[in-house]
Amino acid sequence: RLAIDRQLREVVNWIKAHPGEYFLHTDTDIQFFPRFLQAQVEWLRWMKDQELDMLFMRERTQVMANLRVGEVNAGFYVVHCNERTQRFFERVVEEEKAFPKMEGCPPYTDQYHINRGLKHVRGAFPQKGCFGVRWATIPDIHCIWSEASSAEEIALAAFHHAVNTSDKVALLKEVR
Image (cartoon, rainbow, N blue to C red; front, top):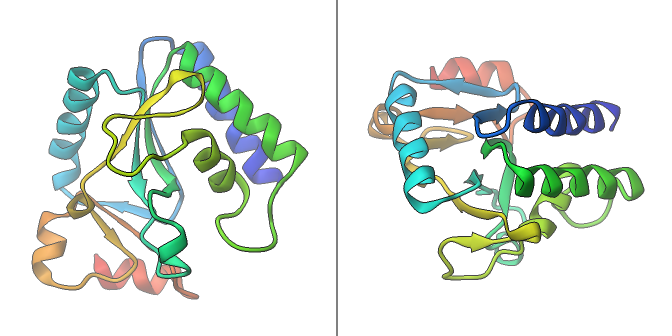
């Protein structure tokens, strides 16, 4: 929990110190592929064209999936540093400190609070969350979730998130 709190404080500090800039936040179990460089350019152009504040990776777990439609994964997101995103993440920090959500049904910790603040509405684009943040999700094809299903998936992906495994190192090597 302390690592998550520190990580969230660093996100807020980065937003405050870099107004107008964009940054990418990732978990440590993400590996990047050559396609990432082009995908990142596409995401930033899309964010600017659509005036989006944040882009997320969609949560693709099979754990209670029918109850988690619209949920994003807190392990990968792009943020435009501005007042809306600063206020949004300050609220996430406050809520995480008050209620770290480590029990019960998923999602947990920061992912729980981020999703509550995003206020997903099925079919809406762009999505609008607390403090007026405008957000969307990157195309699923840009991310391999857990295990790759085919060589084609690896060729098209920009990155891989090694989730849903007890051996992340082995999964990262397998997909590489």
